[in-house]
Length: 121
Length: 121
Length: 121
Image (cartoon, rainbow over all chains, first blue to last red; front, side):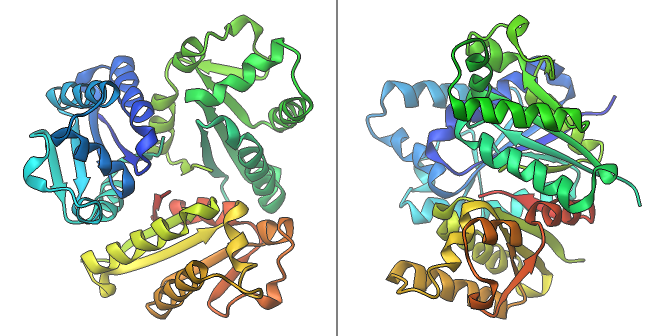
């Protein structure tokens, strides 16, 4: 069987916990070797990356740790440059596991064209 | 003409009314014989099924009745087992028209791969 | 290269700013000549069109102007008749750039079947 390709889209800051739980449930259900998964964050959802450089609270630390674990399992985690600029977040200070793209919206559209399923938790 | 295949995804408890209205509008617009429709509930949206066993209020009763009517019209209504567990909802007490799957996220992804359109009200 | 086909779905009134920003970012990123874009509004999101005939506040005026500019760039902007009726909005008073369809949900489903990517900001 081929891999199951999927993109999770998040633009609301309050949806990180649910989005990352979806990613984990998907991997646990079908197994890492069948997963091709990408998480694309744009809009206000990127504000979580601002907290990285500041004194992030406990919940945000947990979420960032979950992202790191997903990234270690070959989940691609993408932030939209337009959204980072709009929220005055420096790319230099992003966690190393983040990939920045010029426009998250384009990524979401092209990945579906290429056969990825779209999920918006 | 072939059937129009679609999956409605709901994970927010407050979106049941809108989601079920979308299902009804779709059927009314294209006709039952052209519809292949599935509703997948995960995340906190499954909390509505907890109300079943308790003294559900009037609005929830109306929503559950609408689900039953959709199910009578061959709409598949699915709940995610991960979400049921996370919300301490016993599968034994679910309405009979609900199908439980191990992971709602996997269902959403595989149905799109199989040609279903995705809608997130 | 062919055009990138995409449909933006909006049903929450508070998501207009983000949805229109997504449309603009997409066009700016890939260029108008590669874009085939449609925005479908159903549910309570159509309430913005009620404000047209009334004394719309400044923020709504800005959003309607952005819609007009997108429409000028061949972005199709669609409102669902079911949603207009549910919100008691007369079609006669809609801005000229709006196309009304009988059921927004059907449009969303058929466009994906026809190869459009789906995005729900």
